[in-house]
Length: 498
Image 1 (cartoon, rainbow, N blue to C red):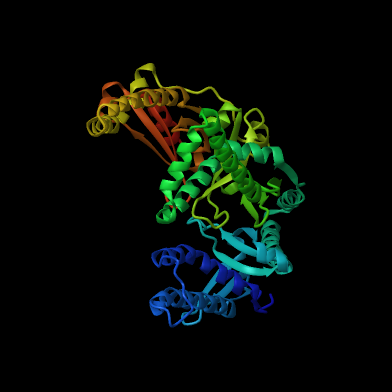
Image 2: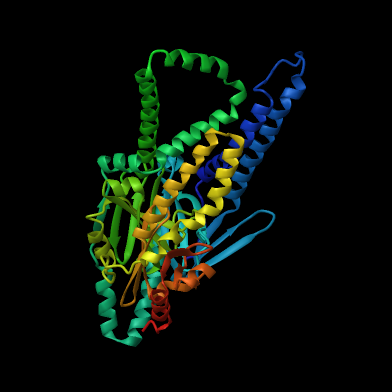
C-alpha cells in the first residue's frame, strides 16, 4: 500500500480561522457593550487609550486564531499504511492516530460555503468505537477526489479481507457476499417545499426565533427607549383592539417566515436513501451535509409526535444510533423530520423488516391515574402559596395552574403503555410529546424496575429500558404499570436472546 503522505487543502486554514472567530462573537459583543460602543481613532481625544484596549484585545485573539489555523493546516498529514488510515498533527506536541480500515463504519460529509466555492468537502471518519458523539478523525478540507480515494481504499481493503475469509469458509459465503454488494439504491423519503413549510409550522422553530429576538433585546436593553415605545404603544391601543391584534399577528407572521427560512436552509433537499445495508441522509442549502448510518448500528427507533404534529396527523422519526452523526454531541439522529402518521410505518418496514410497528399495548390500571399528576403538587402548592402571598388577591388565580397539570397527567396516563412481541419491546410514553420507542432485546443495555412506597401500596411499578446512545444512553419509561406487568418485562429481558 502506498505510503504517500497527503495534506489538507490550504482553505482549511480559513475554515479553522472562521470556526475560531465564531467562538469569539459573544465575547467581542460583551466587550463592545461594556465599552458603550465607543471606539475612537483620534489619539488627542480624552479616553482614547482606554477605548483602544478592546480593539487591541480583539486583534490579539484574531491573530492568534489565524496563526492557529495556519499551524493546524501545516502540521496535519494523513496516509495509508498496513491496512490503516494514519493521521499525524500537532506542532509542539505531535499526535498520531492509526485507524484500521476494518473498524471504519462510515464516512460523513459536510460542505460549507468555503468548501463549495473550491469544490472541497469535510470528511468525518466514524469507527465502531465512536460512541462519544465525536468522529474518530476530521479531515477539515480535502478535494472530493481525495475523499473518494479514502472511501475506495477502505472498501478495497475490506473486500480483500472478506475474500480471504470466504475462501476459507467456502464458495457459498462468497456468493452471499457478492449478492450483498449489488443491492440497488432506494429513495425512502424526499421532502418537498410543502413538507418544509409544515415542518417549520409544527416544530419549535418559531419559539426559537422569538426567544432569540428576546435574548438580543436583553443584551441591548439600556439602549432601547422603553418610555417612548410605551407611549407609542399606548397611542396604538387607542385605535382599538383590532389594530393591536393586527400588529401582534404581523409580528408572529414575521417570526413564522423567519422560521420557514431557517428550516428551508437546514433541510433543503432532505433525502433519505437506503443502499447496501446503510442509510444515507443528505440535506442543507448553505452547508450541505451527508451522513451514513449503518443499519446494524441502529439501537432503537423513536416515533415522536409533539402536540401540533399530532393534531395534524404528522410525526417525526428519530434514530438512537451508536454513530457519531454530524459530529455533534447529541446522538439522536432525525431520520424523518416530518412524515404523515398514516404513512410512517411503510418506509420503516422497508428499512427494518424485523420490527412489527402496530401493536396493541398493555396500559396502566385505572388506579394509577393519580400517580401521573399528584407528584407535581410538590412544586405546584409552594408556587401557589408564594404567588398568593406576594400578589394577593390576583395571585390567588395561580390555583388555576392545577387544571392543566391534571389534564396533562391524564393525557400521559392515556398515552402510556408497552408491548412485547418476540424479541421486540415497544414502549409508548409522553412528557409533552408522544414517543413510541421500539427496540430489539439484543440492543437493550439494561431494564430497571422502580417502585416508590406509595406505588408499592397499590401494587404499581414503573419500568425503564436503556440503550447505548451517546455518553449516557437513551431511555424509555413506562410509568405506573401493574406490578405483574412490570415483572413480565423483566422476565422477558432475563431470558436468553436466543
